Amino acid sequence: MPKMIVSIDGVVIKEVQLAKDRTTMGRRPYNDVVIDNLAVSGEHAVFQLAGDEVYLEDLNSTNGTYVNGKAAKKQLLRSGDTIEVGKYKIKFLSDAGDDVVTKYSAPTAAVEAEELPQATIRVISGAAAGRQVPLTKIVTTIGKPGVAIAAITRRRGGFFVHVEGGGNPTLNGASIGAEPVPLQNGDLIELAGNQMQFVQT
Image 1 (tube, rainbow, N blue to C red):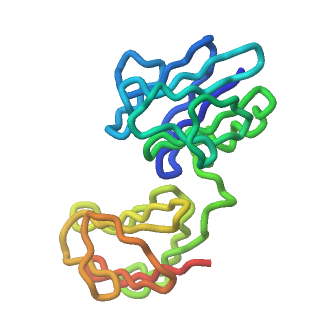
Image 2 (image 1 turned 180 degrees about the vertical axis):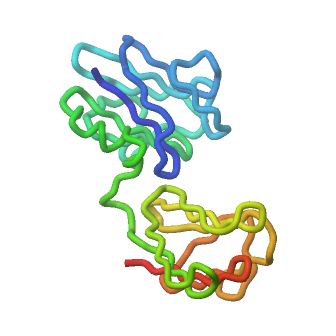
């Protein structure tokens, strides 16, 4: 059965089976696929089953619907096509593409591994000096709960850090806070008196 894997920033948020002749998508709660985001129109697009084929039709949405980076009004979908609606990406998989589903739907493989960089955090000073933390999860948290925690997010575009708590955390000597900041190879993070280095491989 054809299905869609819906994700944002590389994180899978839902998987939808295309079991009906018409599957609607939009911001309004009565849609079959609800995407609650202002960039998505109330009735944004519809997926139509025609035998073994699936057509995507944009319903005159404000911001448009894109298939593989190109604006689409009505288009026949092929297994593996990527549909973009606002910041959301929807991977379409037909029956023939079912062997690919596990790569997208498994929680530990929500992001395509071949597109992700590899990196570790090396603890330079403090009680855990010498320890290395591989950044293999989508979000890795480091620090002391209640004092200061650095959350490092792994995305297709690289790694980003944001900090929760106090202690005047810094990145290469500059203060960092709740807004995500991109990390570069060799960056030094200071958190609650501990110094760590971001190392990308």
